[in-house]
Structures are given as structure tokens and as C-alpha cells.
Length: 269
Image (spheres, one colour):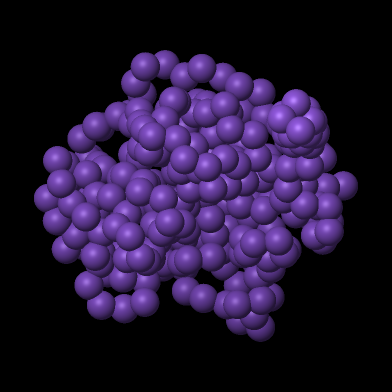
């Protein structure tokens, strides 16, 4: 009986390992096809971005330019509020903010249009979970256009949910993630969508994302909002000015050195 039990356990482990190793078993095949592609939303069979080892630092701890608004200087959350309203209740210590248990997502009190955003993050040094359950957060413009934050270091998941992905739409060009616990930088240039007077989308939202000095997207258009397991759209008309939201996904993610500045316009003072 002892030997049979061990053989059974070994067999189950082998089956589990084989299942996890199959790319098609990561993600979903019962979701809609993403317009303009042959892939399902969160499709595990979509090609995995190639891995690029970034330089040791890029814009890490970059001082804010003179015309920037500092959103977090490591001292307090005075520029932030709970996404549900009221005070932001994340933990602040040692120059960073950290997601507190059951505190919920937070967002900026101020709103911005067409901006350059600098933000640094660190996934937990102690690895718990895998795929989307490991070091998960997100940077969401107006709470609806997401740039994914995830521990994507040796962590297979569906490609449109990797670090730097436009969630549920476009995987990053490459995987430039650092190991768990190390500080990483995002430099995001976001162009807000615009609608005409009849509510028809006139200019889609577009984004450039640089992760640890490596370009993940260059003026890539969002197909719309970025919901889970569904295709988004531009049915909800809103102003160009939007808040920046940091997601609470039940992982103790850390953020620091956050600043934002308007892109501005050519030939205007």
C-alpha cells in the first residue's frame, strides 16, 4: 500500500507538471477573439514575448522635471484617495507605498490628459503563487485602460497579461522583468482618447511603455477598455482628463517615485 500510494502521488505530480508545461493550458480558450487578431482574450497559446535582460538601472529614482507634478514622494498619500472614495489606506514606509490587506485600489485626486508618467514598482521578494496570482497589480488610466503590473520573471502566464501588457489586448514586445523584490521602472506616455460631438470615437487612446529601459510598446492603440475575459470598446464617452489608478490585486506590491507631466503641444508656449 505504501509503495502504491507513492506511485499514485508520483503519477499525479507528473500529470500536473505536464499539464502546467503545455502552453495551451495557461489562460483561456473560451473567451472572445480579439478584433484584428486570431487570438482569444487571455489566450495561453499566443506566442510568449522573448526575454530581454535589462540594464541594472534606467530611470530608477529619476528626479521629477521642473514642470512635473509629484504624485508620490515617499512621504504620504496626500495626492491619492481610495477608488471607492475616502482616504487612501495603503501603507507608507521607507520611501515607498505598499498595498495593505483589503485596502482596495487607490487613484489620484487630480486628473490628467496626454501625459508622461514615471512610476517604479517592486513585486514581493517572497514568491507566492504563479501566473496572475503572483505579484499582480496594474496602472489603470481612468480605471479602464490598463498597463499590467506583474511578476513576470520566470512566471508563465497568458501573454496579454504579462508585465507591460495592454491587459487583454496586446502583449509586450519583450519580457524585460527583473527578479522578484528588485525595483523596476515604467515610463509611460499616454495619449487620451477623443470623441466627436456625436459620441463617435475620433482618436483612440495610445500608449508608449518603456520598462527598465526597454521599449514594450510604441504608440500602441488601445482597442478600447481593458476588462477581464472580454473585449473592451469606446462606448463610454469621457473627458480627456483622467485619474491614474493603482490596483489592489491582493498582493503586497510596492510603488515609489511617481511623477507625471503634460506632454504639451507643438508651437504653443
